[in-house]
Length: 244
Image (tube, rainbow, N blue to C red):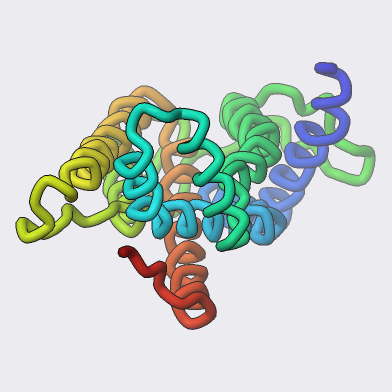
């Protein structure tokens, strides 16, 4: 399995990264170009995941109504929920499957950047890719991407917050009364995740080489931008879900 992973994902991405560095000998620019290339390659899968996640978020009020209407009857709740998915043509696993497919690519990219910044695995280069020996990890003449960077880690956390903010559900108005209690709870959980994920991003980022934080930052910005575009198209193409 490891051999397949290396041949299909790790080695090609490593060669693209080193090839970009050979053309433009700045490791920061190479990371930026590689990140853009990967995001373009995964654009359809990411869009599918974002649309599914957005649809599930919009159906949440209806799902809460079903839970209240059939409280204690789990079989009826499951049946009505699946019917709701069918009516609105929503795949409950649609937001997970594309992410699971992308995960090996992200792992390979992480390993490529880690190996590239440390000058390892150059023996896996294709014959037509020149071996640079060692990479100059100083980008733009001042930023050493092999060292840790608190600034890039914080910026990555901020980008994560921006992305998560777009997906956060608003708390129901006070006029909703007791009926809005479940939605209020869901909104509170979303709010906790809104701050938890950026915090984890910063904590993890300050322990990684700056090159990986740079990838994380740019990847999150590109994903958030794509998310914004998908939301705009989704809003024009899909009528709002009506609640009773």
